[in-house]
Image (cartoon, rainbow, N blue to C red; front, side):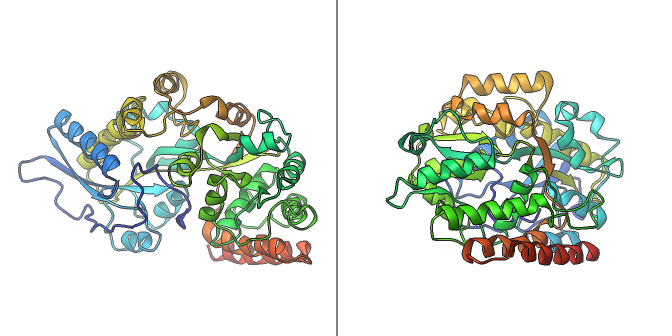
Length: 450
């Protein structure tokens, strides 16, 4: 998807709100360095402001070059890794790096505009490929051909404050499993008073539409039809999502009076101990602690209420269509070294992360299966520095949920759904049936345009 900045590709040890821009060099450049090496350009190097992450990334790349002396890796920094304002322009202009970062929802788009190399015949050389979860591999497979490699994956869940649960007389080890239970728990938490909010949700900057989608999936619904041609939000499941939000906002008073919230607002509320619950992926937890004043011991994670499905997302790398066979092979080796070796590399060296006070033990990302997953989890557990027991409910509950990726044309659709979510949270007399009917028509038009 085209990120609006409310998701992070990895947690910065030294956070920065400054986006740094790098000049990209694509495969139009000579793929051979002066000394005869194969030269590849790659992006998503952490910016200089993230000193620790930057040092890890550069050290890992240097180690790769030492182990592969025939390859020269030229890294380009970026924060965020993909800027939605420039992504399509770089694609159209042929200025993408040889190995470039994408969100899961970018895969088909990049292929459709003919800017991705078909790497099907090369993945057999990537020793880790078969260990990656099939559902994540499938995201980068279009019409039977492979165009990319997953790097991380996440699924949505429910973050809740155990301390507030206890104060409200709720069992902190028994999070709500249904939306009815969530509504009841939110009401009890809000009754604590002193500005305490039981449940908060986003409703602006496309983030309301994103969460509507996650909540619809949890009810067993879908945003668009299986063939991607028609909206499927004007349904009993869609109505249940909006009715629940409206009831909590106006009948229960459990969502507070301030609305049109975005992720930073909600994170601030949770970090300050004034919020009981909100939907998010596990990567929010260290942000709540390191940036918003939260405490790891108070923050727990449960699966999505509803028990039917959850929204998944993540990122990976694709290859420039101009990349040579030598560049593709070198790029795959670099990805294997950096991200796809259990317990090692930029995202998997848990001992190094722990030594530098980065959180180790969060339930996601969980990229691998089988023996590779067992090894990765073993190393993670050995270096855990967060209360892993707080996330067990999430791990257990996710086993029975259907994992669903975001809809096509996600950002445009989220903009439409934003209006519906914000309406029920700001207008007591909002007409849910009309809101869903209007949204459905607008989404149909978006899908028709392709």
